[in-house]
Image (cartoon, rainbow, N blue to C red; front, side, top):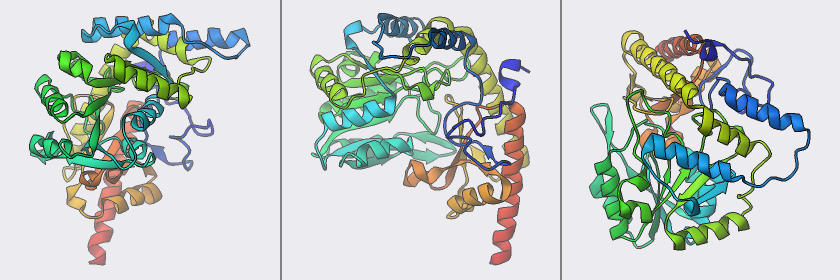
Length: 393
């Protein structure tokens, strides 16, 4: 039990995207947490709010130094100040970088299934998605490096966007995997954008490796996107940091950020971020232990109460990627049924690419009691859906 995380907070009627749902529906879809952020962050924001003036802001140097210190201590990655740029969110940054680093109709490689908004950032800018499907065997995922290189050597491929750790499967990529990805990208003149927004949400005892920290080649051929938004539940504040060691790439992105107006903070963004990195370590440690316990509870529940579905083993994130192949090809209909008939809103795996069609994604960053209620609805909904399906045959 942990009162910081066990308290159920009513978020309906608060303009929450996640909880804009019916009165009896449990929202376990979009990736924000149902926990109050760290007290040190709340205090920093309250102090800012108390001033009563909310004018235009500059990015203070402490925003950058707090990130530098955190990554040096926690991830053994020493980034230089000149490599770093503020952005009003990882997604706006990625969309801007797609425009600067590629031309219309060129191709951008992703490892699918992957964070669905990557597709939006590519397609909405007139570029084409080239998906290298991850290999799913024995309940785990691996990169198909033969297929990946084929996609990267396409003359129209100029960019690769990846998650490290990976959303939605929750995998921490190894040094060997990251080295190989970069080797192929270098060989075929493809720049890597590494979205590392989930990097501090790892299982206790597990550590992620920054793409740029693997070796000098990875550092010079990559762009790293960082933010406190996932780990400290600050997504609504719109603050991120983009790290680019190569001067030529950095200058192109700097111009793009300012052209696209994604380089200015709101009045709370930097203060909250600084507090997170400077004072939030103990809170984050407690959070990761709580999420780990939730994850174990959910996995045990599925094994004992709903063995037809399988939770893919996860090393990071607070997201469960659940194998529903037994329901093929009706998983999307199952999700709609869960929502309409059993008051449980989850993410359809099909949103993350064709290879995600037989999966669902569930957000377990919520009080344990709420999660258990959601799992019971999942089980009850599964039984009702399969019964209804069998009766219709």
